[in-house]
Image (cartoon, rainbow, N blue to C red; front, side):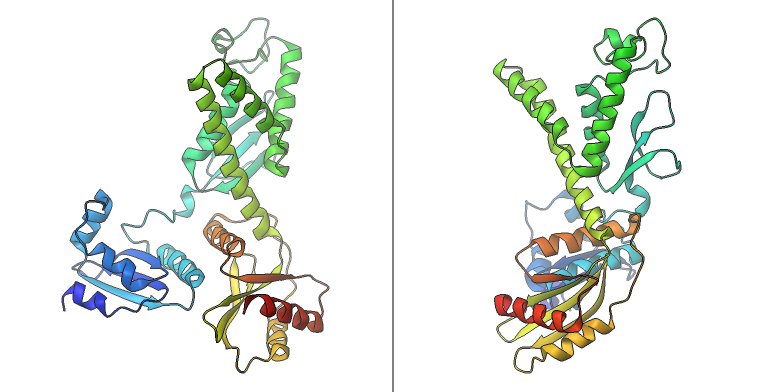
Length: 349
């Protein structure tokens, strides 16, 4: 059957599509809120297609799909299949080896800030994992340039290093007072990454405004780009902290006027889900079912690399307008779960 004719019969529902080449190998996995519309867009000749999409379309010989009740489930299923199948054309969901950390080397005379792929030194501090190497590099380089932290002679001496003469080092190599200033900046960076302390961003924003007033727009733009990179990393840190909170979360998403989907989420996993009808809804039995799936677990000390995609999907989903949810405290009793469910249903369904 012609692919265009086949896709015409696809449902206009959320789901995942799997594209295959002439050998039957899955070369691309994607997700959509509307399978028919999304997959059809690939098969229409369009100048807006990127070179990657053009190359992909030339190799497609068959397309399969898997229907999900919600777009959220499509996101999770896509993530799972990409990690499992590793299709050639999928680059958005990264291999766990490509996730990176910011490492602050506390064991050195002059603590360093750098990017690393592994947490392999118990003495050092690590933040992440992050998914964008470019964003991490931009944030680190911008911080070092703004605070003149690029000393190429970290062991203190009586003479300044070459970078000092270039305005890249604050003088930590020869001036004890500047060395202490460097340590203070490192401590502020740690507070920024650990607690979202905004003093560094305040410094940068003030400097950016002053440079703009002086018409030095090139320097102001560089600082702006650093600020944006830091904000992006802080948002990722929120996702990571959210996943580590060890809470059970009950989520309800309306499907239509008569049905809704219920999820029980823990850390980065959906541990229970059920499609429910408003006509025969029994909050008491649902609360009991939820309670049966709640187990006492140790909190996560850190989030593993292969969990970050799911954490981001769940975090974004809960912050969207697609669903309503409530968190189950460790002290919540069955009757309280029942009451919380009724409250959420009143506002969402």
